[in-house]
Image (cartoon, rainbow, N blue to C red):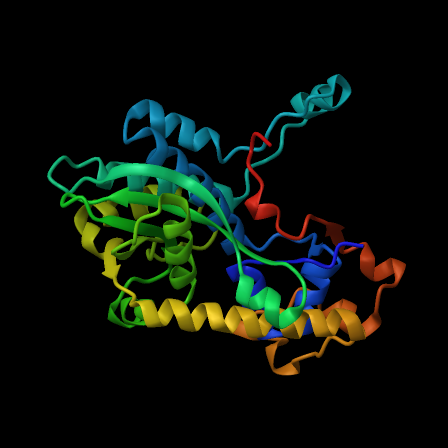
Length: 318
């Protein structure tokens, strides 16, 4: 039986929130079958913007980026026939993702804005953690996927973290230097390129803030919202630079070692603590509440599907 442990920023953070939630997702491989619109928009935007970063800003690249947000056609003939007869109706979340990609490409296509030299988008890194292995008594690996690696106009290496946000204001930007996620990705960048990154650039794309009228078609609403992006682009797009020092990276690695030991102890004992104060984290109900309350009954499991624990690390062509 494989007793090794793979940690990512997402899995480590989920364990911080609630060990039981970590158990359902990463030990049992369960995800809620219901889609969360904000998560769907962010996922599709990331898929499209990775194409723009890889291929550069051009009409052809935008066409490919938008294509990346559509469901893939089935390969089996019977499924394909049914798919063509009843093609999937795009969700508002998917329509919004395509709208944001068009606005992003239009804004950063401006030749007067600084340009980056792309070193690769959606780069996966893996690194062994010997200190964690010594502490936990089993191999521990740390992995992740970096949105974009670039050299700036001075030839300095930066990790670019792409985000979508409802509002880009001083409060939002002020919290970014405290984000531990990029500390993890700076470690990964050094593993991938053998160079010390200068820091992180938060590449933030704001969502529409125009009020949607009652009964208004979503596409018509976005047509009105488009005017705001042209009139005040600085309120919808931001590239904020933040730096990290070696001590912050060392502290994060130390926390991973401690977390690895806790996870492996829970595996051995079979006890996964439940943090009930995280059941409504960020004003959103935990997707595993039903499992924690009722257990793995047939009825409850109908609301979940199986997904590889670290599926985000898998390459499209794998």
